[in-house]
Length: 417
Ligand SMILES: Cc1cc2nc3c(=O)[nH]c(=O)nc-3n(C[C@H](O)[C@H](O)[C@H](O)COP(=O)(O)OP(=O)(O)OC[C@H]3O[C@@H](n4cnc5c(N)ncnc54)[C@H](O)[C@@H]3O)c2cc1C
Image (cartoon, rainbow, N blue to C red):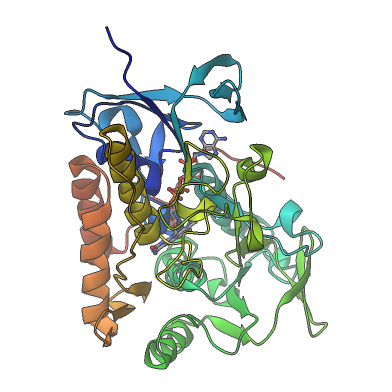
């Protein structure tokens, strides 16, 4: 039997899954590796964190994702290195895996910008564990305040969201609705009106990558929901129970949600791949890694270039399109054809602020706000979710929450820090 070329994909996120899918029918054997046995729909993690959705709605088991693709296998494990001479991927506690093509699709994590105390005390929002941990923590703050209401003065009900990009805006808006619409009736003996949601953004507006009209609509939507905006300020220091702003003001706060920056997975450097500004892997126009034959990098971990060679933003459409592109290039190479350059199709940007309120900048200069923006946001997120079961479940959960304001606000794994 002739051995077929082996493709190993590191990471079963938005990008990695597309690499494997686009190799359907190609004469290769694909192994997709992930340190979790599920793929995570990161754009809805904030809903898990703010009790909008149960955790299982935004994750899908990787083994169930390729039912009709017999050239794909999944390996549950953590990649710790690569022997480039022997062409072996090294896994933590497992035998190495041989490869002919290696696709790095390992995503990103939080960037702390060297802010003292941030990595130690702020809550990042990249994994399901982190989102669940944050939800537990938020609900626990209200339980703690009910037992000792004086702790409100100490910041137990002050929630500081750092970063006014889509994730920060969505988190702040959802948190504010959780407090005012759900916790106000959950805790009738507590002065919930004293809870604060503060959004800190270093620039003079939120959603600065969007059109000024969308920015203004987002600011208005957040203010209407009672979110305190601290624009033009940054966080200078975080401690267990406070946040110091760049202007010197200290906010007592037991919860700091860090939505401020993206740092490519350090695996890129561990593997000795060339990296550029911000630590993203340097790739050629066809997305192969510069000076590493057989290696490719996609999604958040890579500096995926636009038509002018400038790095594209670290968002889901870039990860998915770059993943599909690399799968097709590998299929071309193994069938004796040359590679093509990557061309990105911009699908627009959107962010939800709360119930019946979202902003969307779509191709062709179309700007949607309010209910229409929100409906398009709902439709798009449902469309891109993995698995019919998840889509049905999310739709039911959203519908139920819309009618009743009921939320899955469970403390599932009480954790003390
Ligand atoms: C909270 C949040 C909200 C977002 N909202 C939006 C949005 O609204 N719209 C949008 O377009 N984009 C959004 N994004 C960005 C989008 O989710 C990312 O751009 C996208 O997930 C990147 O895809 P990826 O395949 O590069 O990485 P990921 O989807 O992060 O997948 C990486 C995978 O690699 C695995 N992995 C990492 N290291 C290892 C290792 N050593 N061994 C094995 N496996 C490993 C991880 O477990 C993970 O499954 C959001 C991101 C976050 C965090």
